[in-house]
Amino acid sequence: MKYIITLITLLFFLGCDNTTEEAVTAAPSVTTIEMELNRSYSVHTGDRLEKTSDNAQISMTKTAQDDTTTVVLLQGSAQIIRTN
Image (tube, rainbow, N blue to C red):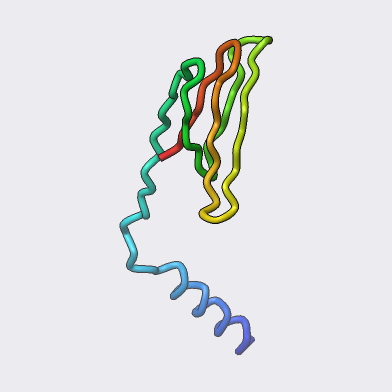
């Protein structure tokens, strides 16, 4: 019986938390960039590259020194979806 009263008291105090504010997380903003032919774009971790035509061809170059990736639209159409 002593353990049950202790357990109920502990649960009561845990339930009486004085924190009334909830953490509000802002939704990340999304930017869509329509790619132009033969133009270089830098992409970062988390960016998505989507083909918007079946015949889209893209060249990707990754630099080992600073871990950047450059993409160029060679044919068709595509877009970069960037989450900020």
